[in-house]
Length: 378
Ligand SMILES: *Cc1c(COP(=O)(O)O)cnc(C)c1O
Image (cartoon, rainbow, N blue to C red; front, side, top):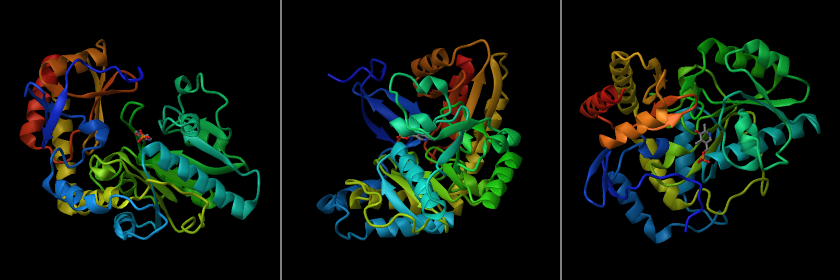
Protein backbone atom coordinates (compact mmCIF):
# COMPACT_ATOMS: atom_id res chain seq x y z
CA UNK A 1 0.00 0.00 0.00
CA UNK A 2 0.92 3.64 -0.41
CA UNK A 3 1.39 5.95 2.55
CA UNK A 4 -1.63 8.08 3.10
CA UNK A 5 -0.10 11.37 1.89
CA UNK A 6 -2.31 12.14 -1.10
CA UNK A 7 -6.08 12.18 -1.43
CA UNK A 8 -6.87 10.96 -4.93
CA UNK A 9 -10.22 10.76 -6.69
CA UNK A 10 -11.45 7.31 -7.58
CA UNK A 11 -10.34 7.36 -11.23
CA UNK A 12 -7.38 5.67 -12.96
CA UNK A 13 -5.58 7.40 -15.80
CA UNK A 14 -3.68 5.28 -18.26
CA UNK A 15 -2.50 7.52 -21.11
CA UNK A 16 -2.25 11.06 -22.39
CA UNK A 17 -2.16 12.92 -25.68
CA UNK A 18 -1.56 16.65 -26.10
CA UNK A 19 -3.57 18.42 -23.37
CA UNK A 20 -5.81 15.41 -22.66
CA UNK A 21 -5.49 12.40 -20.34
CA UNK A 22 -7.55 9.21 -20.67
CA UNK A 23 -8.95 6.83 -18.04
CA UNK A 24 -8.95 3.04 -18.14
CA UNK A 25 -12.53 3.39 -19.47
CA UNK A 26 -11.17 5.63 -22.25
CA UNK A 27 -12.92 8.66 -20.82
CA UNK A 28 -11.17 11.89 -21.81
CA UNK A 29 -10.19 14.75 -19.44
CA UNK A 30 -8.85 18.16 -20.42
CA UNK A 31 -5.81 18.74 -18.21
CA UNK A 32 -5.23 22.29 -16.96
CA UNK A 33 -2.80 21.05 -14.29
CA UNK A 34 -0.07 19.56 -16.52
CA UNK A 35 0.98 17.43 -13.57
CA UNK A 36 1.45 20.59 -11.46
CA UNK A 37 3.28 22.58 -14.11
CA UNK A 38 5.45 19.69 -15.25
CA UNK A 39 4.22 18.45 -18.63
CA UNK A 40 5.16 21.64 -20.41
CA UNK A 41 5.01 20.14 -23.91
CA UNK A 42 1.85 18.12 -23.16
CA UNK A 43 1.47 14.34 -23.27
CA UNK A 44 3.04 12.00 -25.80
CA UNK A 45 5.23 14.62 -27.44
CA UNK A 46 7.02 12.81 -30.31
CA UNK A 47 10.41 14.50 -29.77
CA UNK A 48 10.36 13.63 -26.08
CA UNK A 49 9.38 10.05 -26.93
CA UNK A 50 12.32 9.92 -29.36
CA UNK A 51 14.76 11.28 -26.74
CA UNK A 52 13.50 8.71 -24.23
CA UNK A 53 13.94 5.88 -26.68
CA UNK A 54 17.39 6.85 -27.91
CA UNK A 55 18.49 7.63 -24.35
CA UNK A 56 17.60 4.15 -23.10
CA UNK A 57 21.01 2.64 -23.86
CA UNK A 58 22.86 5.02 -21.52
CA UNK A 59 20.29 6.27 -19.02
CA UNK A 60 22.81 6.67 -16.25
CA UNK A 61 26.53 6.37 -15.63
CA UNK A 62 26.97 8.64 -12.56
CA UNK A 63 28.81 11.93 -12.40
CA UNK A 64 32.12 10.10 -12.15
CA UNK A 65 32.22 10.10 -15.98
CA UNK A 66 31.42 12.52 -18.76
CA UNK A 67 28.39 11.74 -20.90
CA UNK A 68 28.13 15.13 -22.61
CA UNK A 69 24.32 15.52 -22.24
CA UNK A 70 24.59 17.48 -18.99
CA UNK A 71 27.10 19.89 -20.52
CA UNK A 72 24.85 20.45 -23.52
CA UNK A 73 21.84 21.18 -21.31
CA UNK A 74 23.90 23.43 -19.00
CA UNK A 75 25.08 25.48 -21.98
CA UNK A 76 21.50 25.81 -23.24
CA UNK A 77 20.34 27.05 -19.81
CA UNK A 78 23.22 29.52 -19.60
CA UNK A 79 22.30 30.75 -23.06
CA UNK A 80 18.60 31.21 -22.20
CA UNK A 81 19.15 32.89 -18.81
CA UNK A 82 22.38 34.86 -19.21
CA UNK A 83 23.73 33.24 -16.02
CA UNK A 84 26.99 31.31 -15.92
CA UNK A 85 27.11 27.79 -14.47
CA UNK A 86 24.71 24.94 -13.66
CA UNK A 87 24.34 22.07 -11.19
CA UNK A 88 21.69 19.41 -11.84
CA UNK A 89 19.45 17.97 -9.12
CA UNK A 90 16.29 15.84 -9.32
CA UNK A 91 13.51 18.03 -7.94
CA UNK A 92 12.57 21.53 -6.89
CA UNK A 93 13.22 21.08 -3.18
CA UNK A 94 16.60 19.59 -3.94
CA UNK A 95 17.52 22.46 -6.27
CA UNK A 96 16.52 24.97 -3.59
CA UNK A 97 18.42 23.09 -0.91
CA UNK A 98 21.50 23.25 -3.16
CA UNK A 99 20.94 26.95 -3.84
CA UNK A 100 20.87 27.59 -0.08
CA UNK A 101 24.15 25.70 0.32
CA UNK A 102 25.65 27.66 -2.57
CA UNK A 103 24.64 31.01 -1.08
CA UNK A 104 25.98 30.09 2.35
CA UNK A 105 29.30 28.88 0.96
CA UNK A 106 29.70 32.05 -1.13
CA UNK A 107 29.22 34.10 2.01
CA UNK A 108 31.47 31.86 4.13
CA UNK A 109 34.30 32.02 1.57
CA UNK A 110 34.12 35.82 1.44
CA UNK A 111 33.06 36.90 4.93
CA UNK A 112 33.73 33.90 7.19
CA UNK A 113 31.34 32.37 9.72
CA UNK A 114 28.13 34.01 10.94
CA UNK A 115 26.75 35.49 7.70
CA UNK A 116 24.28 32.72 6.92
CA UNK A 117 20.79 34.10 7.25
CA UNK A 118 18.34 33.87 4.36
CA UNK A 119 15.30 36.08 4.07
CA UNK A 120 12.29 34.54 2.33
CA UNK A 121 8.80 35.94 1.86
CA UNK A 122 5.65 35.26 3.82
CA UNK A 123 3.25 32.95 1.99
CA UNK A 124 6.09 31.46 -0.08
CA UNK A 125 6.66 27.79 -0.89
CA UNK A 126 10.14 26.34 -1.41
CA UNK A 127 9.82 22.58 -0.86
CA UNK A 128 9.34 19.71 1.58
CA UNK A 129 12.80 18.86 2.92
CA UNK A 130 13.54 19.95 6.48
CA UNK A 131 15.47 23.00 5.24
CA UNK A 132 13.13 24.04 2.43
CA UNK A 133 10.13 23.64 4.73
CA UNK A 134 11.83 26.15 7.00
CA UNK A 135 12.51 28.40 4.00
CA UNK A 136 8.78 28.27 3.24
CA UNK A 137 7.19 31.34 4.83
CA UNK A 138 3.99 29.69 6.06
CA UNK A 139 3.56 28.62 9.69
CA UNK A 140 1.43 25.60 8.80
CA UNK A 141 4.55 23.96 7.31
CA UNK A 142 6.54 24.38 10.52
CA UNK A 143 4.91 21.64 12.56
CA UNK A 144 5.86 18.12 13.75
CA UNK A 145 9.31 17.84 12.17
CA UNK A 146 11.37 20.05 14.45
CA UNK A 147 14.13 20.88 14.92
CA UNK A 148 14.17 22.66 11.55
CA UNK A 149 17.25 24.22 9.98
CA UNK A 150 18.11 27.58 11.56
CA UNK A 151 18.81 30.78 9.74
CA UNK A 152 15.61 31.75 7.95
CA UNK A 153 13.45 34.81 8.54
CA UNK A 154 10.38 36.00 6.69
CA UNK A 155 9.54 39.38 5.24
CA UNK A 156 6.27 40.57 3.82
CA UNK A 157 5.91 40.33 0.04
CA UNK A 158 5.70 43.70 -1.74
CA UNK A 159 6.81 45.54 1.41
CA UNK A 160 10.34 46.79 0.80
CA UNK A 161 10.58 48.44 4.20
CA UNK A 162 9.91 45.15 5.92
CA UNK A 163 12.68 43.53 3.87
CA UNK A 164 15.07 46.36 4.78
CA UNK A 165 14.24 45.94 8.46
CA UNK A 166 14.97 42.22 8.30
CA UNK A 167 18.38 42.65 6.64
CA UNK A 168 21.30 42.47 9.08
CA UNK A 169 25.03 41.77 9.05
CA UNK A 170 24.05 38.08 9.13
CA UNK A 171 22.07 38.18 5.87
CA UNK A 172 23.62 36.22 3.02
CA UNK A 173 20.69 35.82 0.63
CA UNK A 174 17.09 36.69 -0.17
CA UNK A 175 15.01 34.00 -1.84
CA UNK A 176 11.80 34.79 -3.73
CA UNK A 177 9.23 33.31 -6.10
CA UNK A 178 8.40 35.99 -8.68
CA UNK A 179 4.88 34.64 -8.76
CA UNK A 180 4.00 32.83 -5.53
CA UNK A 181 2.53 29.61 -6.87
CA UNK A 182 1.37 27.31 -4.08
CA UNK A 183 0.65 30.44 -2.04
CA UNK A 184 -2.18 31.40 -4.42
CA UNK A 185 -0.74 32.65 -7.76
CA UNK A 186 0.39 36.01 -6.42
CA UNK A 187 2.72 37.93 -8.75
CA UNK A 188 5.25 40.15 -6.96
CA UNK A 189 5.10 43.84 -7.86
CA UNK A 190 7.66 45.07 -10.37
CA UNK A 191 8.83 47.99 -8.24
CA UNK A 192 9.31 45.79 -5.16
CA UNK A 193 11.36 43.23 -7.08
CA UNK A 194 13.57 45.84 -8.74
CA UNK A 195 14.20 47.64 -5.45
CA UNK A 196 14.99 44.30 -3.81
CA UNK A 197 17.48 43.45 -6.57
CA UNK A 198 19.15 46.84 -6.13
CA UNK A 199 19.52 46.40 -2.37
CA UNK A 200 20.96 42.92 -2.87
CA UNK A 201 23.59 44.20 -5.30
CA UNK A 202 24.56 47.10 -3.01
CA UNK A 203 25.02 44.87 0.04
CA UNK A 204 26.44 41.76 -1.68
CA UNK A 205 23.39 39.78 -0.60
CA UNK A 206 22.64 37.03 -3.10
CA UNK A 207 19.26 37.15 -4.79
CA UNK A 208 17.86 33.65 -5.32
CA UNK A 209 14.90 33.32 -7.69
CA UNK A 210 13.00 30.11 -7.02
CA UNK A 211 11.66 29.56 -10.54
CA UNK A 212 10.72 25.94 -9.93
CA UNK A 213 7.15 26.75 -10.95
CA UNK A 214 7.52 30.05 -12.89
CA UNK A 215 10.50 28.99 -15.02
CA UNK A 216 10.94 27.21 -18.35
CA UNK A 217 8.37 29.18 -20.32
CA UNK A 218 5.48 29.08 -17.85
CA UNK A 219 5.21 32.86 -17.55
CA UNK A 220 5.69 33.67 -21.24
CA UNK A 221 9.46 34.21 -20.98
CA UNK A 222 12.08 31.52 -20.44
CA UNK A 223 12.23 32.64 -16.80
CA UNK A 224 9.94 35.06 -14.99
CA UNK A 225 12.92 37.16 -13.80
CA UNK A 226 13.51 38.22 -17.41
CA UNK A 227 10.13 39.95 -17.34
CA UNK A 228 11.15 41.81 -14.18
CA UNK A 229 14.35 42.95 -15.87
CA UNK A 230 16.58 41.84 -13.01
CA UNK A 231 19.62 39.54 -12.85
CA UNK A 232 19.36 37.12 -9.90
CA UNK A 233 22.57 35.58 -8.58
CA UNK A 234 21.02 32.12 -8.40
CA UNK A 235 17.99 30.67 -10.20
CA UNK A 236 16.42 27.28 -9.47
CA UNK A 237 14.34 25.30 -11.94
CA UNK A 238 12.53 21.96 -11.79
CA UNK A 239 8.84 21.25 -12.54
CA UNK A 240 8.56 22.11 -16.26
CA UNK A 241 12.22 21.56 -17.09
CA UNK A 242 12.02 17.84 -17.91
CA UNK A 243 8.60 17.87 -19.57
CA UNK A 244 7.62 15.02 -17.21
CA UNK A 245 11.03 13.51 -16.42
CA UNK A 246 12.33 14.43 -12.93
CA UNK A 247 15.13 16.99 -13.07
CA UNK A 248 16.05 20.15 -11.18
CA UNK A 249 18.70 22.77 -11.79
CA UNK A 250 20.65 25.38 -9.85
CA UNK A 251 21.89 28.10 -12.17
CA UNK A 252 24.48 30.53 -10.86
CA UNK A 253 25.41 33.98 -12.08
CA UNK A 254 28.91 35.45 -12.10
CA UNK A 255 29.28 35.70 -8.31
CA UNK A 256 29.05 32.05 -7.35
CA UNK A 257 29.74 30.30 -10.62
CA UNK A 258 32.90 28.79 -9.08
CA UNK A 259 31.79 28.63 -5.42
CA UNK A 260 31.17 24.87 -5.47
CA UNK A 261 34.34 22.89 -6.00
CA UNK A 262 34.92 19.14 -6.10
CA UNK A 263 32.69 17.30 -3.58
CA UNK A 264 31.12 20.48 -2.16
CA UNK A 265 27.84 19.24 -3.59
CA UNK A 266 26.81 16.09 -5.46
CA UNK A 267 23.92 13.90 -6.50
CA UNK A 268 23.82 10.30 -7.71
CA UNK A 269 20.98 10.76 -10.16
CA UNK A 270 21.40 14.49 -10.82
CA UNK A 271 22.29 15.34 -14.41
CA UNK A 272 21.91 11.81 -15.72
CA UNK A 273 22.05 11.64 -19.53
CA UNK A 274 18.43 10.51 -19.97
CA UNK A 275 16.90 13.40 -17.98
CA UNK A 276 19.25 15.89 -19.60
CA UNK A 277 18.44 14.72 -23.15
CA UNK A 278 14.72 15.01 -22.50
CA UNK A 279 15.10 18.39 -20.79
CA UNK A 280 17.13 19.55 -23.77
CA UNK A 281 14.14 18.83 -26.03
CA UNK A 282 12.02 21.04 -23.76
CA UNK A 283 14.56 23.86 -23.49
CA UNK A 284 15.41 23.93 -27.19
CA UNK A 285 11.74 24.15 -28.16
CA UNK A 286 11.41 27.41 -26.20
CA UNK A 287 12.28 29.85 -28.96
CA UNK A 288 10.73 33.32 -29.18
CA UNK A 289 7.79 32.11 -31.24
CA UNK A 290 6.94 29.45 -28.63
CA UNK A 291 7.24 31.91 -25.74
CA UNK A 292 5.22 34.60 -27.52
CA UNK A 293 2.53 32.02 -28.06
CA UNK A 294 2.49 31.17 -24.33
CA UNK A 295 2.15 34.87 -23.59
CA UNK A 296 -0.63 35.37 -26.12
CA UNK A 297 -2.62 32.34 -24.98
CA UNK A 298 -2.06 33.34 -21.35
CA UNK A 299 -3.47 36.79 -22.07
CA UNK A 300 -6.38 35.21 -23.91
CA UNK A 301 -7.16 32.88 -20.99
CA UNK A 302 -6.84 35.67 -18.42
CA UNK A 303 -9.08 37.97 -20.43
CA UNK A 304 -11.76 35.32 -20.97
CA UNK A 305 -11.79 34.45 -17.26
CA UNK A 306 -12.06 38.12 -16.34
CA UNK A 307 -15.19 38.34 -18.50
CA UNK A 308 -17.01 35.63 -16.55
CA UNK A 309 -19.88 37.26 -14.71
CA UNK A 310 -19.98 35.65 -11.30
CA UNK A 311 -20.30 37.25 -7.89
CA UNK A 312 -18.11 34.41 -6.61
CA UNK A 313 -14.93 35.63 -8.32
CA UNK A 314 -12.85 37.95 -6.16
CA UNK A 315 -9.95 38.31 -8.59
CA UNK A 316 -8.46 36.70 -11.68
CA UNK A 317 -4.69 37.20 -11.92
CA UNK A 318 -1.52 35.64 -13.25
CA UNK A 319 1.39 35.82 -15.65
CA UNK A 320 1.62 33.85 -18.90
CA UNK A 321 -0.02 30.44 -18.46
CA UNK A 322 0.11 30.58 -14.66
CA UNK A 323 -3.30 31.81 -13.63
CA UNK A 324 -5.27 32.04 -10.41
CA UNK A 325 -8.95 32.66 -9.79
CA UNK A 326 -9.52 33.76 -6.21
CA UNK A 327 -13.00 32.84 -5.07
CA UNK A 328 -15.44 34.58 -2.81
CA UNK A 329 -18.26 32.69 -1.11
CA UNK A 330 -17.39 29.37 -2.77
CA UNK A 331 -14.75 26.83 -1.81
CA UNK A 332 -11.96 26.12 -4.32
CA UNK A 333 -12.01 22.37 -3.68
CA UNK A 334 -15.74 22.22 -4.47
CA UNK A 335 -15.16 24.05 -7.75
CA UNK A 336 -12.25 21.75 -8.59
CA UNK A 337 -14.54 18.75 -8.03
CA UNK A 338 -17.33 20.32 -10.12
CA UNK A 339 -14.84 20.81 -12.99
CA UNK A 340 -13.77 17.21 -12.66
CA UNK A 341 -17.38 16.07 -13.10
CA UNK A 342 -17.24 17.96 -16.40
CA UNK A 343 -13.95 16.27 -17.37
CA UNK A 344 -11.70 19.24 -16.64
CA UNK A 345 -8.70 18.97 -14.29
CA UNK A 346 -7.70 22.13 -12.38
CA UNK A 347 -5.52 22.84 -9.33
CA UNK A 348 -6.15 24.72 -6.14
CA UNK A 349 -3.72 27.03 -4.35
CA UNK A 350 -3.31 29.29 -1.35
CA UNK A 351 -6.18 31.22 0.03
CA UNK A 352 -9.23 29.80 -1.79
CA UNK A 353 -7.83 30.07 -5.28
CA UNK A 354 -8.30 27.89 -8.37
CA UNK A 355 -4.95 27.56 -10.14
CA UNK A 356 -4.57 26.86 -13.85
CA UNK A 357 -1.27 25.52 -15.23
CA UNK A 358 -2.14 24.03 -18.64
CA UNK A 359 0.52 22.46 -20.85
CA UNK A 360 2.29 25.31 -22.66
CA UNK A 361 1.11 23.95 -26.00
CA UNK A 362 -2.56 24.54 -25.11
CA UNK A 363 -4.74 25.88 -27.95
CA UNK A 364 -7.39 28.62 -27.91
CA UNK A 365 -10.03 25.95 -28.58
CA UNK A 366 -8.96 24.09 -25.43
CA UNK A 367 -8.89 27.36 -23.48
CA UNK A 368 -12.47 28.05 -24.63
CA UNK A 369 -13.56 24.61 -23.38
CA UNK A 370 -11.91 25.18 -20.01
CA UNK A 371 -13.44 28.64 -19.57
CA UNK A 372 -16.90 27.35 -20.43
CA UNK A 373 -16.70 24.56 -17.85
CA UNK A 374 -15.34 26.93 -15.20
CA UNK A 375 -18.06 29.44 -15.97
CA UNK A 376 -20.67 26.74 -15.44
CA UNK A 377 -19.07 25.63 -12.19
CA UNK A 378 -18.96 29.18 -10.87
C1 LIG B 1 6.81 22.78 -6.43
C2 LIG B 1 7.73 23.80 -5.91
C3 LIG B 1 8.87 23.44 -5.16
C4 LIG B 1 9.17 22.00 -4.78
O1 LIG B 1 9.45 21.23 -5.88
P1 LIG B 1 9.49 19.62 -5.72
O2 LIG B 1 9.93 19.14 -7.08
O3 LIG B 1 8.11 19.18 -5.35
O4 LIG B 1 10.48 19.31 -4.66
C5 LIG B 1 9.72 24.44 -4.76
N1 LIG B 1 9.49 25.73 -5.06
C6 LIG B 1 8.41 26.10 -5.78
C7 LIG B 1 8.22 27.54 -6.11
C8 LIG B 1 7.50 25.15 -6.22
O5 LIG B 1 6.40 25.54 -6.89
